[in-house]
Amino acid sequence: MGPRVTKRIWLVAGEDSGDQLGAKLMRVLRETSRETIDFGGVGGEAMIAEGFASLFPLDDVAVMGYLPVLARARTLLRRIRETVADVVAADPDVLVIIDSPGFTHAVAAKVRKAAPHIPIVDYVSPSVWAWRPWRAAKMRPFIDHVMALLPFEPEAHRRLGGPLCTYVGHPLIERLDVLRPDPAERLLRTGEPRHLVVLPGSRRSEIERLMPVFGETLARVVERIGPVEATLPAVNRHRALIERLALAWTVPVRLVHGEAEKFAAFRRARAALAASGTVTLELALSGVPMVVGYKVSRIEEVVARRLIKVPSIVLPNLILAENAMPEFVQADCNPRTLSDALAPLLAGGPERDRQVGALDRLDGLMRLPCGGDPSRSAAGIVLSAARIRPAPPPA
Image (cartoon, rainbow, N blue to C red):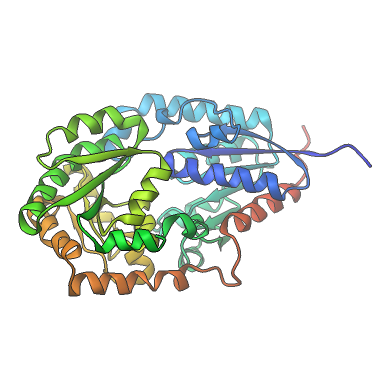
């Protein structure tokens, strides 16, 4: 038997959600590959827990929104250069960029120019179906394969002239056992006190804008329907900020930390008040009715109104093709409108029943065509890209 072959797979994530995807992908790649795999690139806490050595802290590039990006432009540009240099020097069998296109696509485009023989796989399609559709065709020269998490995305890339795109399934559908309540937890959803989970976002700018609004919303709901037991799963790196802002709330909120405690709160929650983002899909697959609120800066609002062409900013609504979960953005994201929508979900009645019925349809819409495991589907594409790597051009 010959020596065991080692593959080099470089992963580049840009924020927490990509870090989680990267960690799961690393785990499954090790399980399914016949070769030993060396990993490198950029990642966060979850990837580091899998034995990953990140080139620099993920916080250096985990920014979103025009103003935060501008404020940290010098750091971002330096980190892009460092990441490109690291990838080119490592010469991996495949580069997997994960979400955060503002950062990862800049890296991928420069890697393609400097080392065109390195295959590049994009894990998570940019929302080309929602805004800036021209990005699909622009990706084609430097992305070889897009692994989509949402079932309607491959058709969007085909229509818009984007790269090859395959629906691999959302990793969350592998985790229904930890997302969904057992019989005892289901009883908590219908009993007293009413359990509410509050999710003001994972980025500093989201937390600063939404915490005061969500706190006053909670106070109004309690005035209207009576006691509510509120739980807030706090992002570890913003723990101090969340604790400080929560002190101003007139209704007590229990802060919990870590994924296990977050999902435990979901399983007993009767309803949720959440920022827009991946967490809305987690809640939906947990069967938790929700109200969604979101705020951005005034400049970002003006730009978004011109560019975003999508009927909803809530992922479950887009998959369902209906606005089943009420959403309130900018001026509409205020304590009065949020509490008016949230109180009936906690109290019970037609609004709650309609939303629960919509959430029940998600499984069938998100299931892979032949069943199967999303992470394994993604790992298969990555390993295939690594195996069929063309020879480097002659020096």
